[in-house]
Figure 1 (cartoon, rainbow, N blue to C red):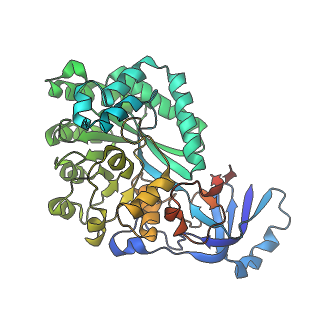
Figure 2: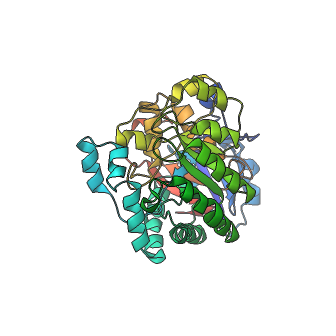
Figure 3: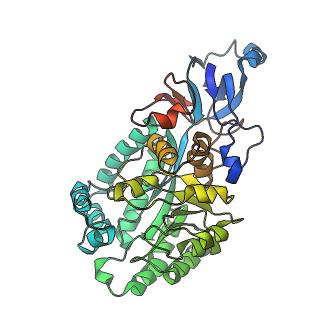
Length: 418
């Protein structure tokens, strides 16, 4: 099938020479085409350009039986959002803990009471794989219609070998049945289970000696993650886990510096992590470590908003020349939303990114944070045809400005219309 989109009001984030990500001042660069056309062929972008050049492709399309034409007058066409950090597979919800937060309990206090991650661990243990697939597929379908075309999903609500494998098998099933591009991350080191309280090193041994080899044997994960932060796993624990993961070809993605200056950023860069995520506590030392590394700093505004936490210094990072990505952290406890349109708005409203910077932070840079920027994150010939068409809107600035509504009319994933 081929899709020809005509009269596009603005075709956003086009590239003739694709780049892996944009950093520093380059984050404010977006190559857009006014009054444009775009052609897909199969699951790929086949061409694009200004409308005054469309005649060059029409002769070859006149005989096509499988051509769909779309008039996008007054509308924008974007590359789909890439959401590089979620915990989308979970059972049930945790709205009662939300009331505890309103009453002033901290993240750590709720965790100590058996809530937080441990609440989701119990619910997941009691749920079947089929139930988890059904619930997660509903969430995937929801975020698809909000413009997300690729998503990373972590395990971490198992915390036993059996249940971590169950989660990862669910993610593998979702890869098979959903049109959304999915990457799986093994996060056995999300928390220390109650039975290992006071003996975290023994649980780390289980992760290294049991979980990682079995995850690798079934080829269930693309990446490995550790919650390296105050009250969870130390840099030394993280070091051991990442070393073991690398032996099985699992590149790191790190939860770091959400609750304190934890050393997570430093250990992430040491092991060439694809990304370090959260980063509320990031100072000059951490910025210097990230400078000239291949690790993508990734900010999760939904969690900071929901937990009423300090904001990661996104503006300072960009001004220092770093790239920055923004993802949803979709999970039941601290960010129960996978709406990347809202993340785009938060990046501008709360973190003072320009709209152009925010678009790069939620498309190209998040694609890099998933290891997918050669395939997704921008409009380029040969990249996968993952796009969305907006409702009639005047410009890209309207996207973060109108934060309370869904501004997407049509979605194209892998060259198919949704």
